Length: 345
Image 1: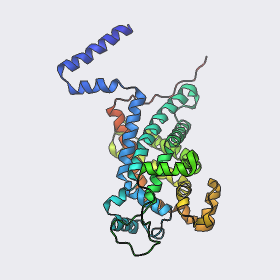
Image 2: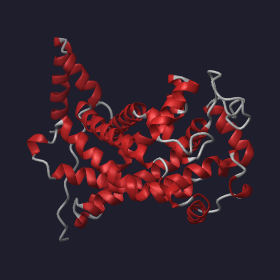
Image 3: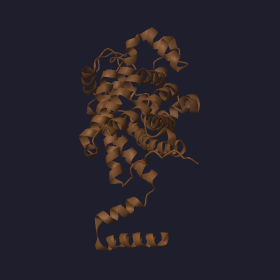
């Protein structure tokens, strides 16, 4: 019977090809890919699209978080103007190559492992249903997995974005205004230099607060998005506006709760470039970093750049979820499985 079904399906596909139907050929090619590969493609595309759309805001956020010379006392608008004046339009995308290079595998792994972890939990712990526990656990685990696999690229992106180089000769003649030459000239150079300085451990500096922050953030993000979608009438669930709205709220809420950890992570990533901080002392742990920032820089520094993050997170997460859901439909990825009844065996 299985053989008969396969011959029937093969005959249908061949017929489509003979008829010259582009749609049929596309379906055949897409359906040949394993589900997890299609999920990787959808997640990677979603991440790249969303990250590039908000790259200018991401650059400014990093400059504010790391208290870069000449930017720590400026607001979002003035910072945007200053970058444009000194570095031109391309300055908004400094570090974006590393960011996209990181976000493609990161988002691909994040979305794909979320689906895989979710299915695994449902298969093995069906009594939990499909409510908040499932989405929180699957989202948190997938976020941690993606971070561990791609963290060195995030480190490179931060170090490149932290550099402010006067490419237009418009800085004041002050040695303290900016670096005369960039400390790094590309992603490969960053990774090689950091590795020579401290080995693999140096490539993961700041991973502690990153993991502590991503676990609740990723879980909350997926949970809120899925919960909001569940309350939308089924005939409107494929609406682009609905997906954008649910994604924006999910990112906004999740980011607010975990933002101080992101600030600690950024400062840990660039602190060797600013030896004057704390007299050259290093943050030994996440909690020590939080306490030191509050003591030396004030508690408001824990939320430096949060306003721009609000502006950034709305389109970023919204676009990410929307592109992912749209790509899932285009790649013929089956709907998520529902909760299984508890076995009485």
